[in-house]
Length: 135
Image (cartoon, helix red, strand yellow):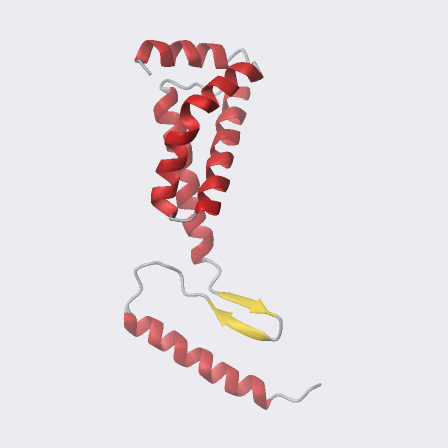
């Protein structure tokens, strides 16, 4: 897609015509999906984040946000969603699964020592929980 055709598409998108947005979606969906999939390595998460990216782009166009470069803006929205995705994952280290607690160590660059220390803390916690009375 040339710069001229991108600018024309952006002008058409500002008319808020759903058919034009459909053309935009068809032009960019595979590119954005590949970009996101490369970052998250999960088909389901990549699909969700790609869909969310297009929703956010549509909302920004509908809100009359000044967009200079549609291509760069679309990739920036997708990139920001991937960053938010990993931030949310990092903030959820423990998940309750019925009666047992499952430790989810985020895929961040934690040292092995920290992971071992966290594992020891979980073991101690399990011992204390088993000592608690039913009440």
